[in-house]
Image 1 (cartoon, rainbow, N blue to C red):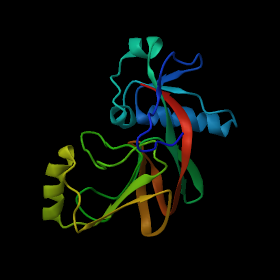
Image 2 (cartoon, one colour; image 1 turned 120 degrees about the horizontal axis):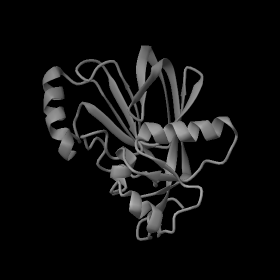
Image 3 (cartoon, rainbow, N blue to C red; image 1 turned 135 degrees about the vertical axis):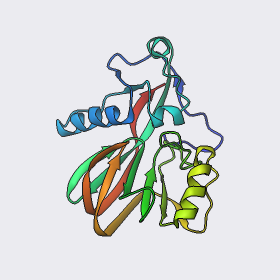
Image 4 (cartoon, one colour; image 1 turned 180 degrees about the vertical axis):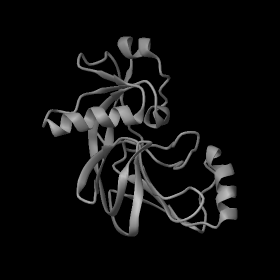
Length: 202
């Protein structure tokens, strides 16, 4: 169930028998994409690392996953990149460089590595947090210093909104990063969210 203000979210164990443990967002994405390609149900994931795990307060505690994990249902990102279908659990980033040019981040998780990119992002609220900007070099240096604490936003040069879907025709092919892994380049990008799509344990 999509999270709602004033309502509890999640339950305490036991872990599902078919739980698949993953140690990164990229590993989680690979497991889910394999299931989707085979038209199989998406398996529940035990999160032992990655930005989604961190956002959910996961402790990377394998014993906890076996005994009494917290079970949550989270949203899943779906990206069509020049006609190629991909999934993502934590984030989609479009950029040529962190230091010049446009940077777009669609965040299902709050964190991207050491950075608190989207302080208001929640992986169970039915929305992606979209950040879109092309800052000067000086502003990028300042924003980078503030990102670990999430204080880089609001910023007049960064468009920030919450979306269930987003499309763009980019000026030129742009590298695409899904859950921290580069998956190629694309000009035409269409992203949507599948609410309550994946059961996870932390």
